[in-house]
Image 1 (tube, rainbow, N blue to C red):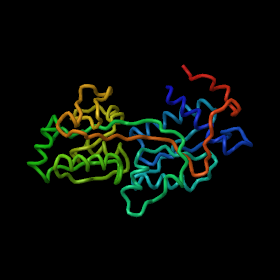
Image 2: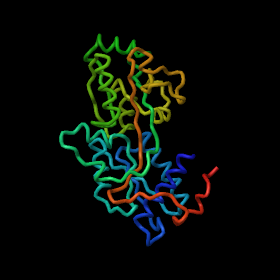
Image 3: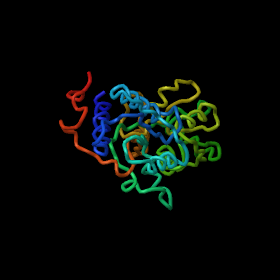
Length: 276
């Protein structure tokens, strides 16, 4: 709740700094999510948008613009006016796209204005029920004995789930074929259907899909997650130092000036203390 509260304050402070002549918002605000609907990033974006809508009496509308590892949606926001009415809620693929492409699709520092880092989503290694492995050690052993048998899905080329799997392949000395998707939810659907056998999945997204068709075998964080406390980490299983996660944050187009939250900011009275 306090994190959502901080988002509310920061969005209004940021947007107002570019719109001193008007009370913000006075019309609907579009929140672009550069991944497919249904995954953890999309769910969080909708939760935040709902709270913003309730708080300020204007609609904050989520628009999914998936494709190209988040690049399509991100570029749509970069091209939008810097007036506070088009925002970007994105996972870490925002930065990864710059790192993995020979010709960077954008310059994060120049093309976007960061507003707030909202959350960090833990990842887990999940396998289809047909895979005869219940631990990381068993999975690595199976993969080494069956080098052509495994494929893995991801949220897209250059996404955190893609690079996490490639890091795991390198660390474990195994081979898997990459099958990219347009978001975490489509990737999870492929895993549930048996089209792929492995996924580095967002734990919040996994918790919404309770099914005996898939099986988490390890956490990709440095420590066990409170969301799945009985699930050991990959590091515990014999790959020391292995740690991946996926942050998500809110940004606006370049020129959406950031502002300190002060008592002079309009609409400050509703923010005298966090909601209970």
